[in-house]
Amino acid sequence: MKDTTTEIFKNAPVPKAVISNVIPSIISMIMVLLYNLADTFFIGQTKNAYMVAAVSVATPAFLFFMAVGMLFGIGGTSLISRMLGEGKPEKAKHTSSFCFWTGITIGTAAMILIWCFAEPICRTIGASSDTIGYAVQYLNIVAVGIPFLILSNSFSNIIRAEGNAKIAMTGMIIGNMANIILDPIMILGFGWNVAGAAVATVIGNILSAGFYVSHLLSKKSMLSINPKHYQIRDGIATGVFAIGIPASLNSILLSTSNILINNLMVKYGDMAVAGLGVAMKVNMIVVMLLIGLGTGIQPLLGYCYGAGNKKRYMAVLKFSMCLALGLSLIMTVICYCGAGPLVHAFLEDESAFTYGMSFARIYIYSGPILGVLFVLINAIQSTGAALPSLILSISRQGLLYIPILFIFNTAFTSEIMLAMAQPVTDYLSVALAGVLFIFTMKKYFKHAE
Image (tube, rainbow, N blue to C red):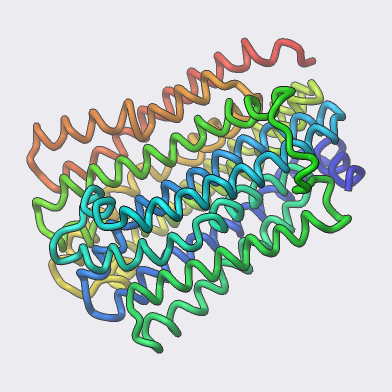
């Protein structure tokens, strides 16, 4: 496995190295996207827009725990890829074991916490009297799968750090395909509605996590989840958290911002909330593909950084930026032109559809520049630059988005302008990412050739 990693990360031509890492990552993100869309689509087939709104309301809580998985996944990937680049495989094993067991502990505690406080959590994140019952039911069941959700989200990233992008992709496909297949059976066939969507999600996460565990226990992996390799000291915990916390903060703030806009949007009615939730799903088609591109190149960039090979690092970055721009433009056109059919697939209520159509086209305004944003984010994270990663993570969905959201809410008193806050923030975020990347290269890449 070490030879394969060296060949892909160190010796393969740049286009081949990028594509071989990016394609499995993008496919993984497509599967995540499909299962997210499947939940909303099949719940939409119940013809109950309140159920759609309830799942939209509960989604931020689910995103919060995906963020915990991202903490260990992105933080672990960054550290492990750099350790392998520096020729320190034992430290990579300690890192993977740390991520595994700490993730399980946090996931178990979170599961218990949700069971105790599901209703107040749902009310806090924007559930109305018409949607609270569905939202609580969904969240209580999904809580069972939180430890597995954290593991699957962590190791779908970490396993790529050892050059096993196809294994990482396969685990995502197994879990998400199971979810997609089970959704219509449990939601419509068994008539379980939102409970069926939740059960399908839990089973998918269990299968995905189980696949990754079987790989990590095999001789095919350079990594370890053996408790004897668990280690916090020697810069392992700080190395993971230095990049993982900023990365997860972005998802946590995304969850927080979703809660805020749901609470602001609810004054326009539950159909506006349902339309916004579906618009976010449509926008995810672009976002998830471009996140896949960005996360796909991070292990490669991290290896180049660890090896001190600045020339190859920059070559990988330039090729990835061109790829991101092309993919961004293509997906923006597809989603803008296809917004009507896409929204109609989830919503039949005329009022909800009108909102969804308007919001979907507003959100897609960010499409042309999102690829550049996610490439720059992962390029910064690959160097282990904690401060720039932290600044960028708390800015896009926090320091920039939240003030803009409230300013627009006060100044315009319009549901359309509430939605406009996101694309305005995204363009400002790209400018900030560019400045932070230049700073990172000057400060953190001094040792490279």
